[in-house]
Amino acid sequence: MIRRDVLTNHPDGSRWGRKPEGRIELDPADHEEPTWEVREPRRRRFDRRSQTILGLAAIAAMLANAGAAWAYWRLTEPEPVAAPAPAPIDMVLPGRNDLGQILRPGEDGNLLVTVTNDRNVPIRITSIGVGPGNVIADPEHRDAGCVEPRVRVNQMSYPVSWEVAKNTVGAFTLPRALSMDHDTARACVGANFTVPLRARGTER
Image (cartoon, rainbow, N blue to C red; front, side, top):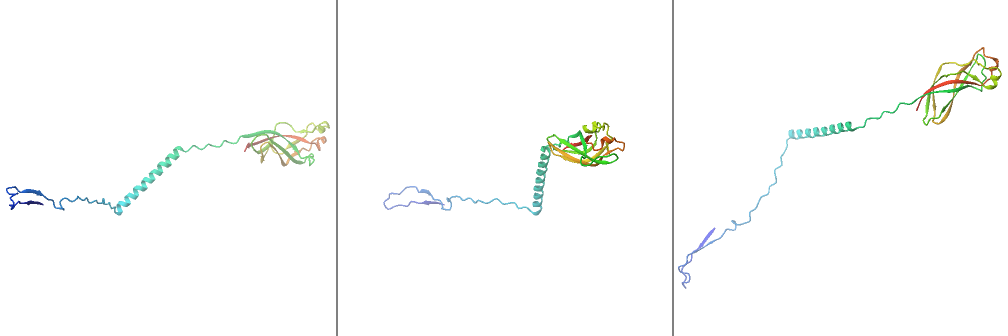
């Protein structure tokens, strides 16, 4: 708003002939500090279809990440190390007749087997069979004439399952596995016989 004051004649004549002086006044409303209206950005609203699409996309991303993690685990997983196969056992050992029963011609008797395991691992004997060599009588009966005793193992092989701990000796019995022929010399009756055997099995 612009106002002009017009100078009029003054009685004392001090202001006669002076041009009117212009003065500019602003309305308070014209020079007030500008105000800025701050508005929050409008939030975008998603309809149900958009929400469903976004949810499916999130699930797909999760599945993709899980598949990548599984594939990485499969690629980096160390190959399982196969356990070594048990070492086989094949040993020749002596067997004996049961001293608690006298072996007579035409009769059967028990066969006693002693297995010595000098390994640092336990073993399992799975079969006992006839070994190389001949049956031998004790020195006393040999001197008496039992030079070729007719004593034999009744089967070529017996299936067994004998466990022997490491660095120990195991004693086992095969019932009625030994027999004496009818034509055995009388000097062999009551003798202590050593019978060659073969034992097979595996380490445990």
